[in-house]
Amino acid sequence: MSSLTEVLAVLAGGFGVVMGASPLLQALHSHRRESSSDVSLAFLVVLICGGTLWLLYGLALGNIAIIVANIVGVLSSSTTLMVAIRWRRHAERVTSALVVPTDDAVAP
Image (cartoon, rainbow, N blue to C red; front, side):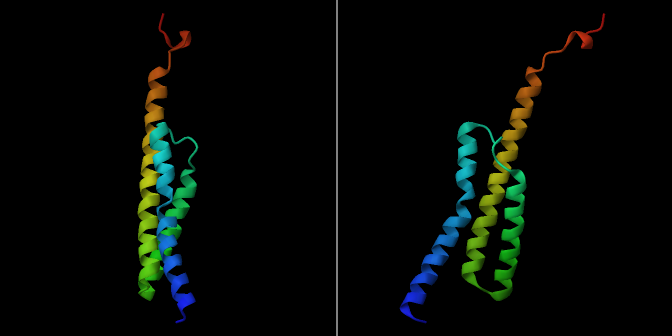
């Protein structure tokens, strides 16, 4: 392997791990705002499914770079999905607690 190929391999592997961890930025943002209304749950599910398939492919090949990057990706995407669901449930509880009964709901 040439030195350029080795440098690119190290950079790509390192960036793959960073890229896999990037959904945690969204989790942190949601946690700080205490809201996940702007997070696409479907996107995270697709990301988890794709990452899982790539992880299985990496395991089949025995390619450590693919395995590590996708373990990080699946874990960070799963964590972000859990944070998003938590804040959506929290918002639903708060909203339902604020609902005021209408006159129609009051018995005479």
